[in-house]
Length: 231
Image 1: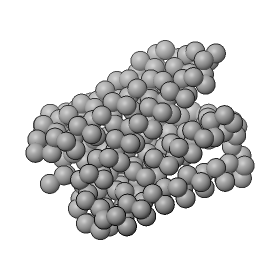
Image 2: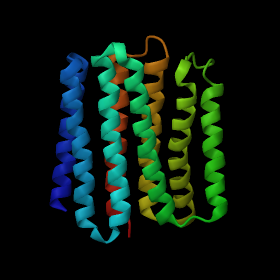
Image 3: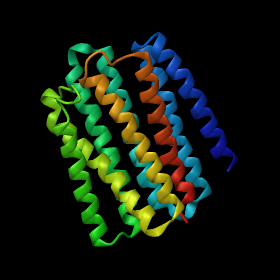
Image 4: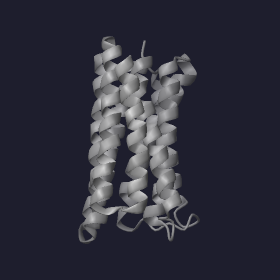
């Protein structure tokens, strides 16, 4: 358990350092600094799994999602380093995070043992939320452009992760699903800020950079820690 707390504390410290570098320097320095806390949320999950070795399948799915997120982190920041290839890196980042959410959804679905009606309700709620994001594009002064379909698909799998964990938490009352619900909800809030930065006007501010990444890393460390709570 001590190693878990050490990994978590170092991850928090690395996040703070990254945010300082990202706001002041950006560029390649920000990209390198961003990889460090991402490595630590993977390490945190590994240390949590070391404590709770009885749930390796769940743990491996969560870790796979975190690894896909690490790749997404790198792709998204490369678009600032190589602006001519911005769209290619943005697509790569989106679909890396899309893959991460699929892993999280699979972990929840396989271990929560939800009834079929809950699965169908989760799919319906996810589709409703994803559709709402497209409907609110203009009222929120966004312009998704060629990323409109990608935004819909990504929002759908993110909302599916949240819906599955929320239904699991409500139906079972088991702590692990409450933790996952909090983690995925923080992820959702982070992406709301990020969508404004990417597709809105004049929203790529230092405040939003800190808010976006603060919510994002909090989400990933909470999701990584969920491995501890699976009984």
